[in-house]
Length: 224
Ligand SMILES: NC(=O)c1ccc[n+]([C@@H]2O[C@H](COP(=O)([O-])OP(=O)(O)OC[C@H]3O[C@@H](n4cnc5c(N)ncnc54)[C@H](O)[C@@H]3O)[C@@H](O)[C@H]2O)c1
Image (cartoon, rainbow, N blue to C red; front, side, top):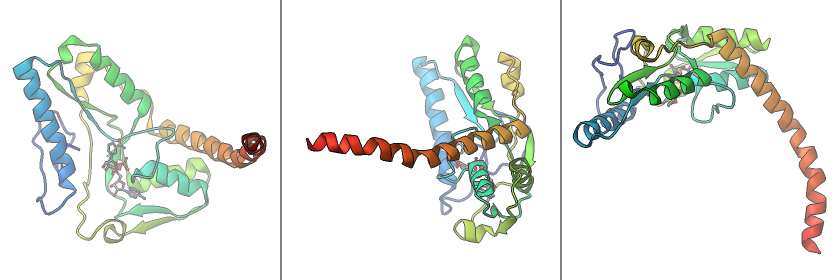
């Protein structure tokens, strides 16, 4: 996130970004996003390139994978498989999750508005939740018996990992220009996610049977 570890909440588009030292590689992510924005805005200034910068805060929704570290898919998979929900750190850190349908609508509204060009907008849902409470919510909605287990940052990430205590978008600017307001509340985001994952699990269980049935005639045909 381009704001880095700024402690101003909520983050507004013109707030200062705060980064850690270059010896902590995680800050390269925030810096690279800032460089992209500088370049996009410079091309707009010098070449009149019609750019709009959208800063996407945590976005989630059905079919998001946990493979790259995303927290909600991980918690849901753990809850549905009856495994412990592993909360990194104290769980007091907070995030704000937007449903992907809300984020996509925000992007389409911005892209269709001529006055958005050359500007920066936060896109997100300011409903804040602690990660521990998110784990509890997943467990409750999934009706899971899994325990919630705290895992120290040093075990979960590399030693010296710095997390952000809070990450809250101000969405006043996008609300003013295109009347954007997120529609999907956190409870529904989690509930839809769990429903979708249950269906994926059920479908995955059916796959081997179907593919085995189809595989035989195909193999036989290829050999003829
Ligand atoms: N979700 C997105 O919209 C998005 C977009 C672009 C990039 N990313 C990248 O993916 C990363 C992960 O995304 P995210 O949505 O989980 O948000 P995130 O990393 O902002 O928030 C997850 C929070 O939950 C904590 N956490 C506790 N237990 C966890 C667990 N078992 N697994 C993962 N995190 C746990 C993390 O330490 C962190 O504080 C982001 O930090 C970012 O680098 C995410």
